[in-house]
Image 1 (cartoon, rainbow, N blue to C red):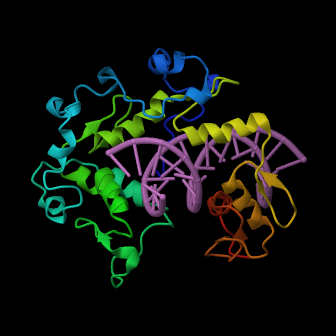
Image 2 (cartoon, rainbow, N blue to C red):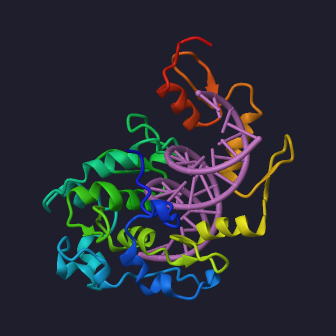
Length: 256
DNA sequence: CTGGGGAAGGGGCCC
DNA sequence: AGGGCCCCTTCCCCA
């Protein structure tokens, strides 16, 4: 399971997840002002999973210092494993899947892009911030106490990570034109383009314009004879991974 | 049925 | 540390 689309299609009545609880909250009941999107929505305590918490940790101002007693990024504390391990292996493996932009192989020689390496899983990062976030979201979560989301089974080691996740439930960024809500401001920006018709990303081959850069990137594949995604069986190439998956699922004949 | 476009979600990285 | 952007990925719909 590569990803869980926690807030997917909640505006479709037929496929709407159980967000009755969320919809009763002030975040979504607020005026539909996309330009007043609260960028740092701190969920009220009742939003967070009560049973899954370690109460003294939750809203304590000294929380982070308690999580990182020796300062963030200390390899020793990461490898210490003093706290009881949590079964977040599924989450970790999920996160590692399909990340072609991930760090280089741990086996390779140290390089500029590998200056910061996770002591637990050996993943390397070019910046300390990258390593720090990785540890907070994944590896440290296996050895530290965690913050659990009330709405789903996800657990995070830091309040910041949990806050970011909870936004996918609270959807603080609301479009004032249609009322649709999003977890992040830039998602809302992209959505607003569907109203304004703005398409800032143009194809240099056919001048077709797109509102989303990723969609342009996918479109560019259609201009290429040899496309990015190739079937290992028949060598046929596809412009999108989803098309390759379809091809494989329907049974590659091995020809063509 | 297949390919392509539109829309959206989430993690990683940079500032 | 947090915000914003980038990138990848997925799902849905339509021609």
